[in-house]
Amino acid sequence: MYEWRKSTEAERQEIIEYRKRNGLSWHNPPHLDLEGEHRYFISASCYEHIPIIGKNKERLLECEVQVLTACRKYSVEIFAWCILPNHYHILLQTETIKQLRRELGLFHGRSSRLWNLEDDQVGRKVWHNCFERPMKSDRHFWVTMNYIHHNPVYHGYVDKWTDWLFSSTRDFLKQVGKERATELWRSYPILDYGKKWDI
Image 1: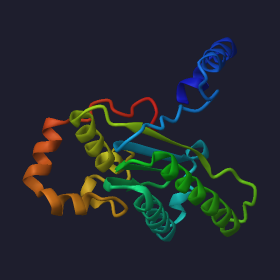
Image 2 (image 1 turned 90 degrees about the horizontal axis):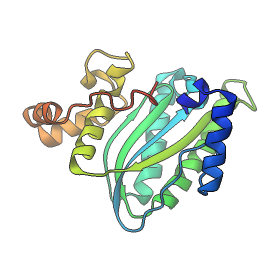
Image 3 (image 1 turned 90 degrees about the vertical axis):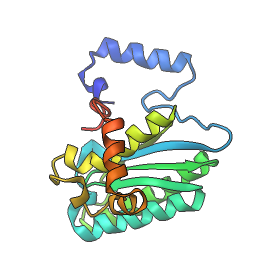
Image 4 (image 1 turned 135 degrees about the horizontal axis):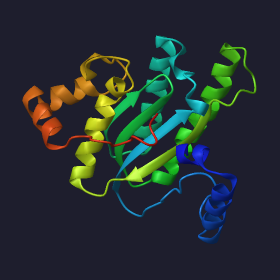
């Protein structure tokens, strides 16, 4: 998406033609409805990364509750999550990704209407899209876990990842302990994960 903004008109046309030829969505990342149980990284952002979720703490909490409720309905397990003022990330396991994505879409629709009414902005586009990526390996899984928990620091909201209230960091630390969390952080560094798309 972000490279698209930097592309020339000719480059954009070439990308669209490629995606048409290969049966892909013209502008959005393709959804991979894999069969069986898989672990996925799911991300959704507000349109143009406007901090609509982050209007206040109540809205951040409401988003966290609603996103987790939607995910629990179709997940075997939720490993990590982080709700930020303009986007959210979740790491989970499901065998029904299509239904889960639809449930998140319903939340996006309901929240758009509610928040636009609250903000006196009826008709405003609230959400850009939701995409999922299956985990390719255990390394990919743990790097993604670290990335999600570190995201509030990455975006400058807090200095320590444990200070952000709207994430699974406290649950994670209770489950694995500080020593194991530190070991996982050192063993699976995030490096440039998300550099080109999570801005």
